[in-house]
Length: 253
Image (tube, rainbow, N blue to C red; front, side):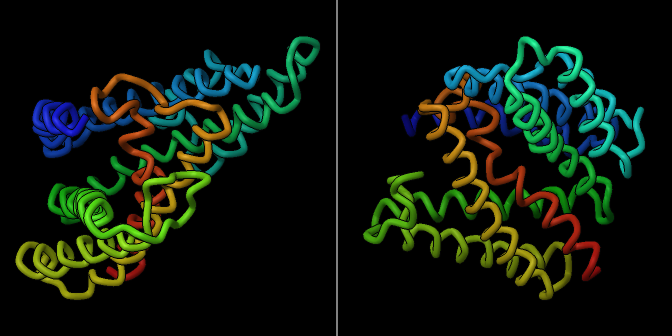
């Protein structure tokens, strides 16, 4: 499994970073595609509970949101109203919970847009790379330290392999990135609190997606990334932490 993870990373990572470096419409198209795939993965998972999300409507709304065809300020309300109208038209065939799961799923995967927003924030690609170095250090340190020293489980009902020691290791890894990258590349020591909060929320994002999989009774959200699972498996921590990173960076800089 680890070898598959490494091979996938070696193949996909350079392309992802190249798109991040180019930014602009290239990154917006990529993040929109990730959101569409992410919603499809949610759709497949919830089918196991006989909940059929409104997938075609969701894809249409996500594209409207990603390409700014609906004002970002009213987007949550627009999503809610659109899914609500669809439910009212189709209510004879649908469970009321499908409406709420569709709306929540829309808002969840739309958080991919914050990768584009981070890249568009000065200093641009350097900030984008800093964010992902934080996430990768968090994941890597948590994995190896947890595997070596993990004894006390955090939430075994959700993720039996995650330990307190691994979580602390992940936080240390993120702080080390902030210390060295922040100092030598971004020229600031003030990024330590930002790194700590971002890593903490990313770990919470891992548990959130684990809860969805436990609810659905599946091991992985998908199979698009060999060794990693689906888009949601690989970017679960990103979805919750990217908006936190973005807003905190704007607040303190």
